[in-house]
Length: 426
Ligand SMILES: [Zn+2]
Image (cartoon, rainbow, N blue to C red):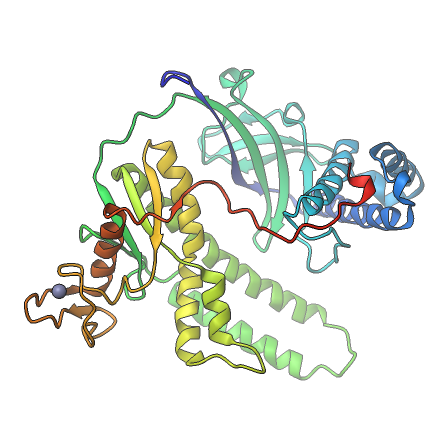
């Protein structure tokens, strides 16, 4: 392919919906119906003999259920079809060893969501600098927060369009996630400098050229006080509840408020992460990061009951900060953003990057004087500087000496043991 050929890009864009209380309850009903449909479908699947588990039979069963069960009728036919498609997709993912077998979805643990599989149903219009209008089947026309220019109206064509959407509810309310497809010019190769990045403890992101990316607290002091107060109240109420007694409406409301504050912190963290990774991808041509295996690090600290982990308290603090900075997501964001700006992302093996001196390359005991300060104890060197910058310089050095480990691309495929595929899979 030549450099002039445009590349197809598919991405999601999430926007907050402004729904009235009656619209919220209508959307809630649709989400509950979608979940119930999934559960009915799963029950049907388990009951059916293998040769009967076909898309046609499932479709017929769904049509029957939608006629017989009143509250399932609130779900638009397209959304019901999307549930069916997702269910069969889930089995395919399972047979191809990408995921576990689908299971029943519980009312409390499942994220509430409704699919709008066809873009032409949405009829998106921008009505204000900050607001757009979208059609939600069986709910009506609703407003959403306009924070990104979507290919709609006269900007839409066969290649650039919104192909569908999904409604998702979190602690802050209903959101709409648009599926957008665009055709874009292939980016010019990035001419910027190389950079090594270290995931820091004292500094969230430290670069090898001395640049740092920092952030404040995610919640204001007032919000933190409120969160603590709510958590204490929830704990108190829980303590006074008799065994077997139902959770009270008041306690539920307290839980919702706690979830709301936590979601707010999470959203601010994600915003910071997006802005930072965009800035990095814009500035540098080659970005080198440590290949960290975060799930393993978290696991090894806690240990098991038979073999409890060492230094659990210290490590759990570190784990908290790793999780809080959400390093894995930073890498994912950098992967696609560097590609979009014509750069590349590389991962290098992690061991000793924080203990080795970036000037002479020796590991000397006691060189890391504190979390923040690194002083090389090699008598011929004596380099000193910020410990996080030292690690970032090592990361870049490892890449330059050809130790790149993983050509960064897409998501990792989980390998599982090969099993015999069920007959109905083919
Ligand atoms: Zn040194």
